[in-house]
Image (cartoon, rainbow over all chains, first blue to last red; front, side):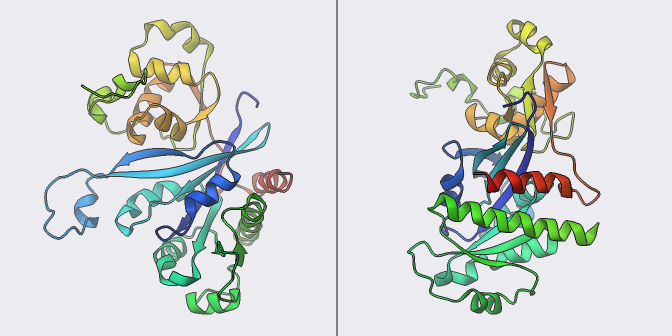
Length: 186
Length: 121
């Protein structure tokens, strides 16, 4: 690796236990690592733990992996923390990111709504990747598009978070989409 | 502290912002994917540094991101940023990040290189 590889990042979003860390592991050169961040004062507004009005600090953990793309280029894949109350961390994750792959489990499709809402509002290029991790696709991608009320230009792909080639193809689809978006906004 | 972990870095397991003197913001803007690498000055001065900055300088003989530094040294992300920011300021490490276009996204040229890289995996 050269002295100064350029870092780029992609965010892997989706609901709890949809396979984000599995997805990252499948393609990462290293065992996924975990970085922790402390929840800041934003917690007062975001935390909805009933009577928890105290200044209790919360730590949020994020799993991430690293993929060497060339001598001069390294890709970091960051999984978003699952719960909505950790959205404060998402702002940092998506800043400067190529875009996001939002993983969807068609058995629990509603769990990806917060991620899609967030990416749409933040103007982050994203694609929806249906994780058919039992090898079975229960819903056709176009049915998922309809259920999510996604605009035509947002790609919906089928992936398998356990398989490197499927994960790579998903990332390729995202980068292509980001290029289309970049070309139209330039 | 009675942390049983046989980790040479277990001494870093103190209250998160103790090691930054209570500061929660870095002196420079550092996205978590920023690549950090030791400078020749940093290599020469490593003996003079205190525990945590020294651990960072030692780790960054290879180019590593802030997120990786945070993970390897069990430092909260914000703490790692403050410490790296200090080391940038003192010239012990240098950082490197992607060029972004006006919308804060990687530009087309960089995206093309990423695409090529992914397709060659």
